[in-house]
Length: 608
Image (cartoon, rainbow, N blue to C red):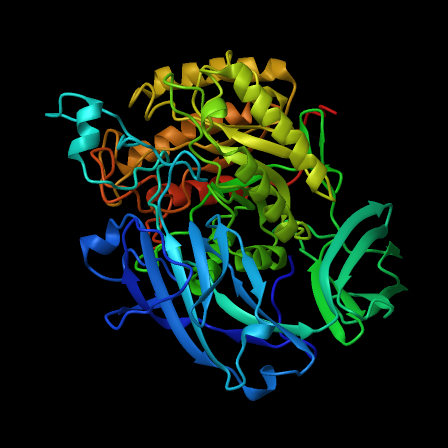
């Protein structure tokens, strides 16, 4: 799916602003929209939860309703030879979309775009009332997973309630995530109307490779519309606006001599433009020449062994919740540069397209993850046989790769985070390994595929070792062997001995400790800034001594909001930065450490 742009053939109207809003309940909305006169005001794009200081907003469970009336310019109305498309970049988690009172589409999945052509729905006077019903409920059938039966993520015991069954009756219905981040909901990303000619470019697929100093680009252009005989032309434009190659046809290969490579920061993330023309339509897609490969225990970018330095992150900020904030995105990228990081993982869902476009330009490497977090129910039942999620999971992967396939910044797909691979190892293998093969089949560039493993009995886990890269979340010294860094070091090194025998590249995708900014102790104890530093030093020592270890992504880039609980002090405090992006003591430790770790050839021994 192409990102909406404005150019000589395409118009673009941003519908962000102040909409009308009303909380609903569990009742399924009708197929005909009946607006209310008693609606509040709400900002779009942004989560609705923190825009009003009312527990009903913060803790809402069920449907909510958005409405906005716009008047489109006359040139967009009637028979003008242009298609008009209404596009939502993300609505969490289920959306029903209405135009002038009539239901026109339903979409499930809160972190990827969807769109619908509305050309024939626009009246002559241009008045358009857009209604959106949003369901924020999570369950065993959604991604991310929600707990059913009113059982919370951190513990199922309810003091004073004699049984879980009694708790189901006593507690009001609420979203209880099987994941540790707040279930922000609403129209979190932009809403836009864009136009194309009646015959238009539907999709562009770019597959770059490198032969010596020559860039090789295989491409495929998909078109739609009545003008099927119109030629498709493609030009490759370099960063200095020079045309380096051109071709005619919907599919083919182009070669660019003395090609400039896309290199991770602080290298040069050089970008080319693929300029496509078809009839009256044109579209320009940026891309970079770079290769990605796993070889032995190395992760190669452009044929050289790469070392990941960075974070897992969240889309999370004050007031906006998970809403798009371009200023914050730019700030975060600059903080990544300041701390000498080169990468992050989109934990635990695909992010807004704007951040990928920034990372293409700024040279930040991304592990792109689906919202398949929390697939597990302990020993009570086999989630792979009882949770109705497989079809939805496959669709999310299709949509994710269709959206993000051309970004040079993306070097690996993560199918999900912390699934149960221990209690039902055979079922887990059947589910995840078949999904691993499915993911590979979707990606034209055939990037490495993984999922992220939770703290578990790694000897019983028969799935993680089959991924292209072993990605581990480990909390020795915090949740496990709490506060005892000597014992934590012993346990972590014991595990690393196990992974060394597997013969795969291994990296850390989560590790860390909650820290209250400003809490200092002479003796480093839990929750103090000094303890956070000492814990990370313990891990770093183990990383540096292992040739097969290819990267460290700390949990988390910044403090973030979670469901309230006795283990959470106003959210998760494992951030290297505070939620308002002030550095903790640990940020200066990483800034010094990562300045002295190069992107390439950090581990001297050649394991290929």
